Image (cartoon, rainbow, N blue to C red):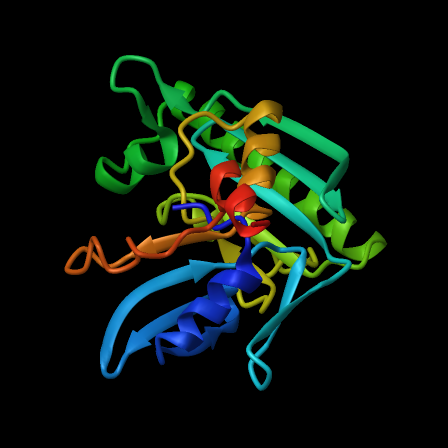
Length: 226
């Protein structure tokens, strides 16, 4: 559920005497009704949250978006939400018959034939090139977030001792959305998603926010004038 007017929504939450807790690592607000979790409000990257005042404010933020699948990746630098640089990577690292990446295949079979070595070499360069590009962004620009979508299997291969991109970087932010095919268009779509406020409601309470009206209809606005 997209929330267009965050200030109005937060006022509604406080009027209902609900409590908020800010989870910085995920840049989201967890909404509680007493001890029960009711939902999560994912905040846009271009907003900051003041937990004391329970208010959001506009902020000038820059971020990286990284999308990785076996053999394909896309990475871009976004300055205040505008893409200024991007790069798409492709590598021959998927076994045609099995449709499985060479890394996954070696984990289960442990074989190293000529074709396997070619794919493995391509895989190593694939991840090295990605790390180099992200390290370049980190070294040259002020980065507030590194938003990523990558499977657990491939994640460890993205990091190197030499690069600036490290797995314990506190700016890392896992994109709460599945990405099937990385590419430039998908980078832009994920960037749009990261600049929206999305309310994820707990399954136990599907109708909890049904009384909240995000944007008043023209009829309601006209009636308010009388």
